Image (cartoon, rainbow, N blue to C red; front, side, top):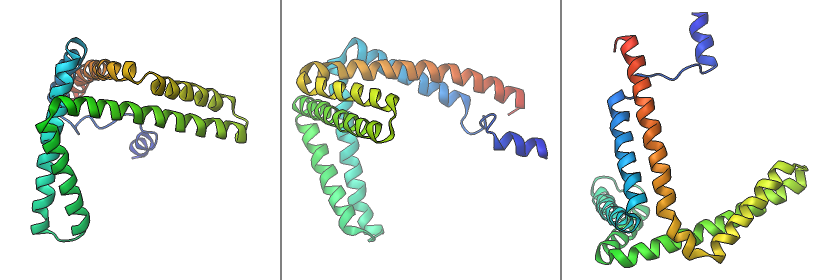
Length: 190
């Protein structure tokens, strides 16, 4: 019993029975395929991804709207979310190409302002706590944000490649982890 408490207290190993290994493998393969698509054909993949997002928002809005018939708590908020989701979904599905440029452009500018804000906060924190490491991170974040805001087109063009790179890394990691989990689940006899 002491051994069980000790291993749980220090978080030695996660429970490998939470997710089946094959589900991790499928997730890894799908993430790898999506990542390769973003890197090799970034334009069409981004348009398809945002079209899928439009369908997701439209269906989500309809679910929020229909949920009012079942549960009237927070009806104002649910109605607001339903209307916003339905409008956004319909706009994206009606104008997928324009929506792609708008959303990517908005996202790029948002990231630029957010990086400047975080950089400023880190620099302020560095001066108040006399922490050079935080100051360096703040300066890097501020420079990154300013570069994004000065060159938004270059930043917007690079977003699909960055997303694709992260998806490829996540896919490879998930595939590797799935085989580790499979080995652990086989050793435990589950």
